[in-house]
Length: 432
Image 1 (cartoon, rainbow, N blue to C red):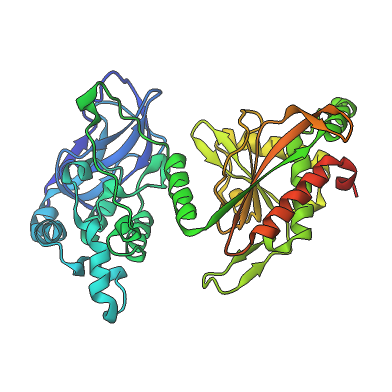
Image 2: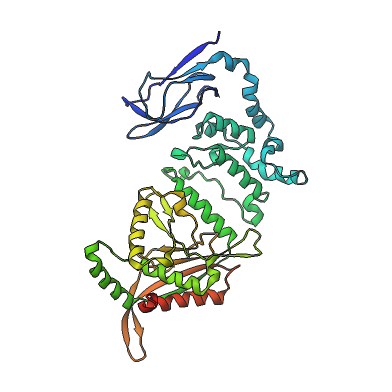
């Protein structure tokens, strides 16, 4: 007869009841001592509850949304089933720890002629930090999968609920490792950053980056390394545009619509994309052809408490200034409330990053590949401008246009920037 073991919620501190927000195991899973069973959340923190015993999960006694406290029954374990196959349960970990062979990555290995190269590329994933591995935010099944592939979970970014590491995150990590040249950044002639113990010079505090920070960092690094950037700086005289904008807002006040400078810039960018079609294209994977887009979806960089996100406003060419003002306000609120769907951040043709509300005179925005250009907008300021006979105060808006030099040459980049300045300097062009 199988020996059934009951696993209860242990002492979880000063919490009477906490909510189960994730169930990390399923019936039939083989688990070890300290493997995570569920994730619970209080009003102050999120924590995982580990198993006090090893065995095969016979029955899960809680569901997502249940309230539990110390002594609540979580699962029933069949301890005899686990004891019958101890070697099978430990074999993958033993293989990884004692003999990190290239064969550990066979499920995603390259064809036979490239076997030696593939092993060299994948080998960095096998140096596992076992202490941190145990604390990684992943289910037992995902941990086992990671051990089989020789992947250190501490190097994998999770995209699941509460940044949990999923099986597909590990697969993507291994694929990326196989795509990278042997030696990593050293192959580019750049030595990797050294590990430094900063506490030797004083008190320090480690703060974990948000998931958005991590993903943005990866995407920006990829784009900076793979895309040859050129940045064109210019200024647009928006004196008349600003006067028109303020008057429009008075007219729209009863409708609750507030048109910002960004709406005008979006319209100007679309006219620029039509005039200079290369800016509305993407390189294909081979790098030998351009994919020309006949739609006009504009990404808008939005700063949130967790990092930068880029919602996409679709069909900007078909919308009025007031339509854009309303939609910009809606997506900004959704972005800051973390309610943007992935589909709402995809399909952009061109991105605008505005720091006008913060300050600065100019900056070099990083292209949001596979787009080929991005416009940075800095804070407008009054400047004395010579009109041929006198200096007069004009409101000047700094523009920073970064573009992919594989697709756009310097002359076309300067022409696009000049064209934007012309459109913004006379609002009548935008109304045509």
